[in-house]
Amino acid sequence: QGQLVESGGGLVQAGGSLRLSCAASGSIFSSRAMGWYRQAPGKQRELVATITSFHNTNYADSVRGRFTISRDNAKNTVYLQMNSLKPEDTAVYYCARYNSALPTRDGPGYWGQGTQVTVSS
Image (cartoon, rainbow, N blue to C red):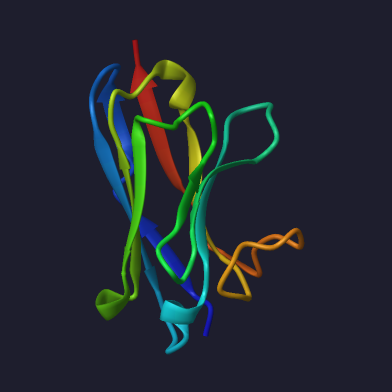
């Protein structure tokens, strides 16, 4: 329970797109909120987007309109579609699972290992 494995990171030019995937283990995926976070060198980890078990979404202001979070409960997978990428989006992106249907102030209970996204100018 709780294992998260990200994939889909890489190097892309500014203006390009990437889709990150996060495969989750366990049978409770559909009843848990999920999120994507990122951490750039020298900076704190920040929230990028969340999706509740009811598929309601929320985004950081810096990515709203460019990124889309979605989930496929049949595949136990959450996605982050990233369009119009900018150099400032360069970071390690982490998938996270909350311990309830909605994101809480306690934050996620489980984290993936992270995947590097690098956007060149």
